[in-house]
Length: 165
Image (cartoon, rainbow, N blue to C red):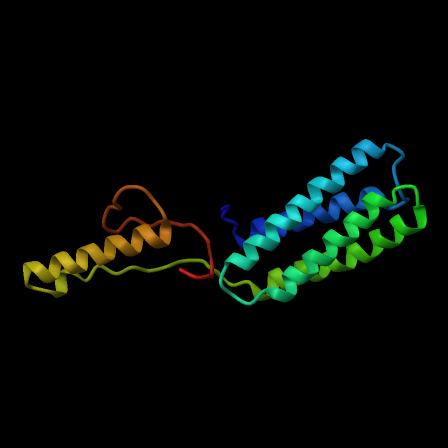
């Protein structure tokens, strides 16, 4: 599964918004290229929707908006010769994408930093030191997903989206 930060999700939705402008005046007349653009948009929306579902949080309303978006994209692809339908769907899609952008911006929490303190110096017994050391290393590996140990005092930056860990 792909990993997306909130900013990456916003960028992907903005790309969908940009593609949507292709249909401001209806079909471009190049049905093959129009269909390729619609398929690419639908695939991107599906990936984002599936990712939101996998996060373990309740984002069903955002996923439903992606489903509605995909249905409207499908309607456009089936009716490229119907200029009124294409333009109307383009306008409706625009408002759906704005709603999705606002939802992602306002509801998806992104952790900017995680502080992991070294408590090895607070325990005296060698067994306790080993347990604390293993737990610190486990936290680092599971939260930051990096290979290899970190040097003490080293800072790492990687935005994390809140989900089920």
